[in-house]
Length: 114
Length: 110
Image 1 (tube, helix red, strand yellow):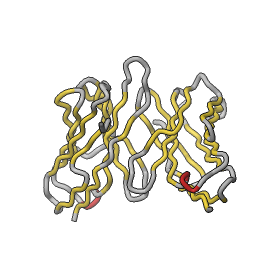
Image 2: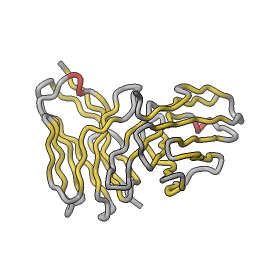
Image 3: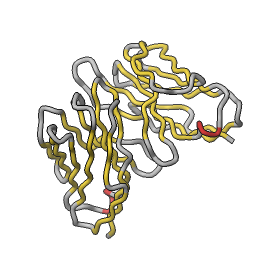
Image 4: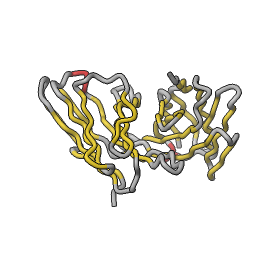
């Protein structure tokens, strides 16, 4: 019954590797987001997709590439991982069309780059 | 771009006291202001939100006030309980892009 789910929950990897995080929402929302929460708990938006179209692309290294195969899924692929990529990555969704602005967050993926 | 400042960064209160967290934002076009609670190791969860056409909103022990002229909004928690202990984030949004404050770690001592 989880509304927004992410896999994996934990990811430990070596510098230089490539990894992906997957997100799915079953709320029927039209918009999905990726946020990064650093070690100081600061939450920062990275990307947003509305109906599979990229609408927000913050200043993020191009090693990060989001992909939305359909409006219920938003994946994040990270190339050439660096130590500074260690963080918790949250997916979120909302129904922007119709004025629903509440964003619902997934459980997070804790990425540790060694 | 939008910038959101949140104060204080830590707040300790006795059970039963009130807690107030304040935020200011820079973009006068922001029109949606949610507050999220994040418990340790968990996801942020919406506790209350307010839109720019409303000055105040209350939900049981939680209330939010918005002063559009001053670009301030505040979270008020009354009769605090130990389970209110968490990190609280304010955010401001225009067009769905949430810009978060730095967070307030609230500790409620029994």
